[in-house]
Image (cartoon, rainbow, N blue to C red; front, side, top):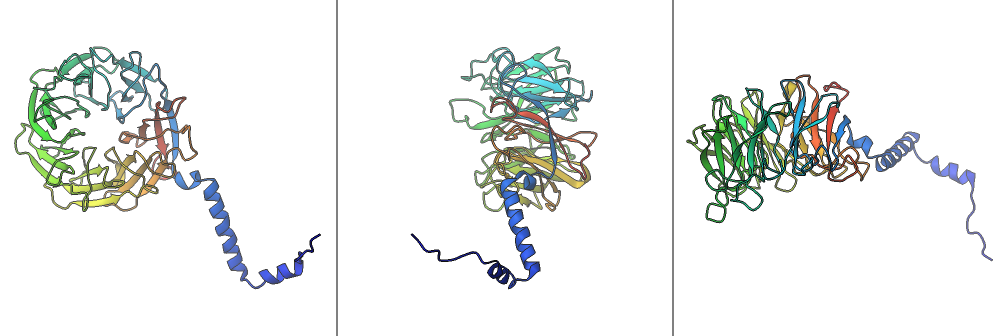
Length: 423
């Protein structure tokens, strides 16, 4: 038998709590409630926007694992690509209405005749055709898995043609970036590699070609695997990035004339003061600055720089949680002085984020954090591609994983906020 050493005394309890200021007790109670709330319901902290999943990709039929973002076609449809899947298993080009209906797989890639593994999206040319690249495949024997292709098709999926089959020598290989149509009517793009199995293997290329596939020309050899394509600046120069190379071997931002002359690395990343390894290209704003991202060091950065290389500013250093981590996508210059982007990882769910920030680096807001509620991540996971702001002001994007019955599926989503972004 054990004697009780204490007993419950209501008077003692009242006497104990009477020592405290009631206002402080209330604050303590509120603090404890908030801690429990955010521990149990992290989504309440993570989401400042409403995300609508418009389409979930599966491992059959319409393709899966979209690595690129979307474009808005002149017909009002959204167009994009998947890296894998489709009827032949090697990727697709698709379209979908902005309300999420009318999804159609326009082309299924078969590896040999038209390419495979589409990492880049499509561009609509002035002739109304869609143009894009596959990073592998094609009927060239110069690379083990094919050196990649450049293709075009109509927006209804007809008149598909392979314009260029990269051969790993005179035309480079592995075009992970898409193409742009410049003011001179040519298409411009990059490849990761040039001539395999020799001293130039790690040099990528900058090329141009007419929209009918003729007059292909390698304009420039770019050191260390350019992952991104180029844009045409308001001054007529082409601007792009290299993932490595430069003065410190952490990548560059470069400018070059459209004939391949006047190459100038205007930024040399050093992994300390200005970031490292830009996976995405740059975007130009009406303020004349170029904006871009790096995936390193650590969680990555967002920067801006003038087109002559001056006034470089690191606007955001991503922290891995409240801002996300590793932005493989570049930034979209949106309405009202906002930049929009995605991070592949990080956020409160660990599977990537969407964010917005002012062009001067202020007012950073994490709009949405993916997979906060955990696997199977029905809202999608790990966005690679850029955000699209359509003519109506709405935001659209893709995730490369989850969203369906498979972790390799991916999604198309629409993002809305109660203020600023209309649904």
